[in-house]
Length: 492
Image 1 (cartoon, one colour):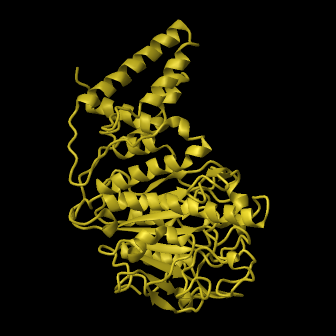
Image 2: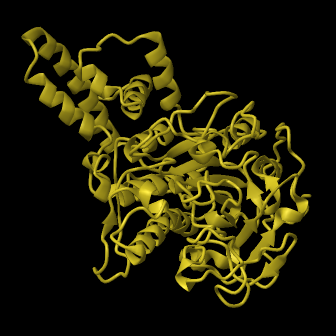
Image 3: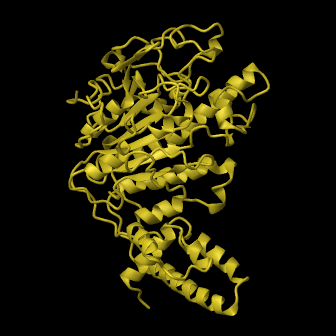
């Protein structure tokens, strides 16, 4: 028996929005707000974009990346103990001797530090930028409220502005917001407007997939799992405690959902070049399991890269953890099973407050920062594997700019003075200037600063966002929007 397109989209949108659980709780009557949300989540996938169009992903990592020495001194001054060196900023020639602290310095072939070296495979496509800061320093973890927007928080975040401002932009979602937060769920970095208008973030990879690929959401070519499966299991469990009349209503919903599932299984799948919209390997039980966080984020980045490869979006924010994240992360610091296997509190590890002594505290600080960067690397690997939807002979990463930063420069002093930042990819569509030697580039933008503090001149990060928006062909109306020169060829 065939099923109507409208009925299919309604139920697929319902699954994507998490609404099937509400049915099991007895919410059988659909209100106007629910229908509107499901209609948005169940929109039909548009055709692939024409031409080589620029795409952008903002990757925000929690609690800084170790831009300060552990003894609190400025990078560039040799600490008393060499093991106290900062972890992120590239070095000049020999690690530990000079960390490019001079504003205006522009260097090709930088030597990466302990944490940034996790991205060595992408160095030739990378521009490391120093000298960026939030408009206010030492605002501690409140930096998450303005890391992606203007310092006065009067406007939407840059991802939303670009998504709404792109001309002739037809996509399933104009600006995807996804990631995984196990603590401080309201500490989300993307805003649809000024003040406290925080956007919803999709943390469930299967529901993210369903919202991006409503006509493919019921199937998986790699194991037969369905986005409906977790909700169906919940509904069947709830059925046992219902009255006969409630059970009869629920049975009718289950029949309808299973019919959609069967219909999707038998329907055609016609992916374009580089587009393979299949559900990633993922189990709902992983979401609250701290030991599976890396796998949850890997599934999310896989969906995000697939969405860009299929033209389902050109703008995304990938939030890896929340500021002041006091939950566990698991790692193997030496790669051989020895040493600390995890930190029970990533936030405290960023403060060097985890471990039984100075050496172990330093290891947990280092490895917790490496854990976050490796989640980013998984996204880069996914983008590099795909073909660009408009230029199949290029990789998706050739046309996708990945901008990486954190709401803090460093967790221990909780400063936003010297934020970590790297831009990777987007060389062909954005014109990211990674130098001419094919070895990557470092730029200290402090000489273009609009503010100054005890560590020198800095550029407010909103100016960098305005520059990125310009590379996407979008005007940004932040108060400070003079572009930074040297980031993109032909801009600034």
